[in-house]
Image (cartoon, rainbow, N blue to C red; front, side):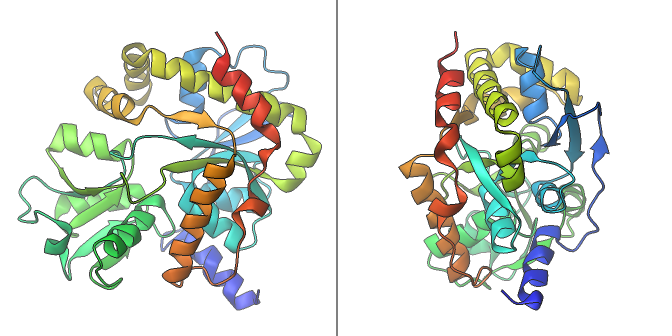
Length: 322
């Protein structure tokens, strides 16, 4: 890969905005360095009580989106973190030394191209030539590409405006863009609190994967800690699916977001941690090929080579925990 191509792909991760520095939440000794997005892994693991007696301290670093989290992995600022399949793919294509050690699957109602309640648009076709905000290299970006391809519309059918979530929300709310392709909790928040409508969601046209990514050197040096982390993350997600009402309440209090937003998200998502298996490999290869067709990834990437199956037993144990 040329230096120029690597810079282009890393730029796709960063987007047009300056990457926000992670907020250091706790640091102790030889802690496992974990990246998180607000209200994600840490929130569910703390609510489920699975972080008690973890074998080493955890240093949590918080990011506004997955792209800067992948950048932090690439820079060795963190050792592991949960990201969507799209930014993971961009990171691998850019040469980041990472692999996926676990995956999550969920309902895709919460990945959507939104319009405001007063928008005249009724379908994707009504967005011809319109401005759609999303994050460069994000799962929202993936959704736009997949939706256009599914509808047999050209890639330039809409004008993409690449923004991080806070800026995208501001542009969407002010009418500076015509639609917003985004993910949870933004989708449920806009639907419940602002009456936004989804023109398209990710069901059927996107795999609905996220990955627990880890640096390759961390996989080699910190396997026991990473194994324990994914086991407990799987157990926490299982607990959350069995206690939607309780988790919605605790999450909404933590995030200062109305409880109905959380209930909508968790009820329809049913997020679960799954082991890397043949179906996950096939779905990630599908993602890679989507980006190759869009000429956003030009290098050949084998999903089987960047997805690590060796943590499967730990994930199975976490999902089976009583």
